[in-house]
Length: 463
Image (cartoon, one colour):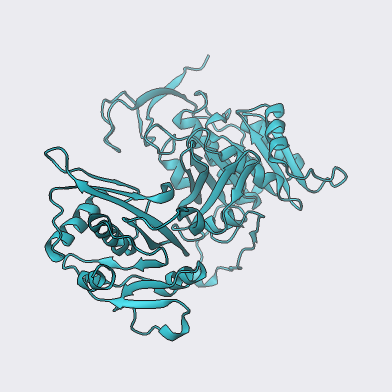
């Protein structure tokens, strides 16, 4: 009987060590090493008998490499197409992660069932066929034509990769979805499912299959309590695209954010609304980010931000009140707390507003997180409005960055921001005077007001 070979793997980064170590030398984390059984022999995997694997690669001059623009698979989900950079690239490996119950399986099943001209294989290692059928009935998607064997959604409940590849060779699908990568096992590794070596090897087999066959593969991944994708960090390096499905499962809106994309921008996102019948695309997210309110209230302004190529208008809410306790509170939701402190210092030094004894609470409506500095001006005006108890018209929006000297700085792609505000019916938008250079202001149907410093805004709105 062969001797069982074991090794120690870091559960965070996948570093391998012949003995147990308290601290990982790669990721510097403590107590992350776990002993796992390893197998050195190469056992049959995806088409290991194929002659293509036995031909050694030869170097080529880059100018002699033939390249043709790859046709993308355009799905019926425009939000997913946008997040992927225009559609699914042939032969790509895509990893989608998110918290439990956020809607990852629902999103993937919707994609699988809404492609009537493609043959999709949905591999589930977590749910039975009956459970998947129950979810499909709830989604209320028209059933496929049973007479057409060249398209439709096929379900396979299996965790062994060798059995999965056998069914793939028989079915020859156009798209494969695996739910989830942590449940798969391969005979090449003897450690349990979900271990570092199993996840790495199974992902490697899926990667080889995707590249050799040209079939795109979606991998659903679990996340840890810290919010990062479970498994070794090398998993994110192996795949072509990493999508993060975010949102509070107690609220209805979800955000599909691109973390990594070899075929497009990493700043794109898609927005969905979770309903009892599944996920609905939100084509105009600015409408959901602007709350409906009756009458004008102080401390509320509208700012513009960019997520990838998409301009959004978000509502900034602030509350300034006299500090009841000794130390004033500074609290922000959806906005960087350090940047809030910086803007408060600018208002006190350059604007003359006494905020040192005031509690300041800031919130970006809709549960949205904003990192775009173009929201600075809206934040400052919102704070002044709450402090002076003077409401700002809901027909006015702002798009500018605020510097430490109180100057109003220019932001990128100002034309897109102005066009979005104009489309939503705003009457006035305040921008930096440095952005106004080169703009054809009369061509816009919205009043564009350039300003150069905080004092200009105060004179226009509060004096």
